[in-house]
Amino acid sequence: MASAALFADDIFIPVGDAPAIPLRDIAPWAVFGLLLAMIFLYFVSTEQGALSLFKGMYIHEFVHDGRHLLGFPCH
Image (tube, rainbow, N blue to C red; front, side):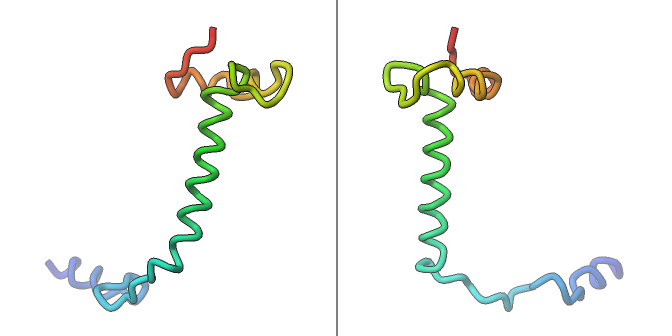
């Protein structure tokens, strides 16, 4: 039990007194992260299909393995 007390007394681990981050500070970063995730999902899942934005097979070949890893069929 002595080691648990020493671990909890570490000055680098906030225990209970850490201030909460306001939602208005987190919201822009959450929206930005969601936007990046949606762009990534578009390129991996539907690019080079009926809704493709770019001609050729460059995007398809770049994300080919990721497409199969995430379970999207492509051929």
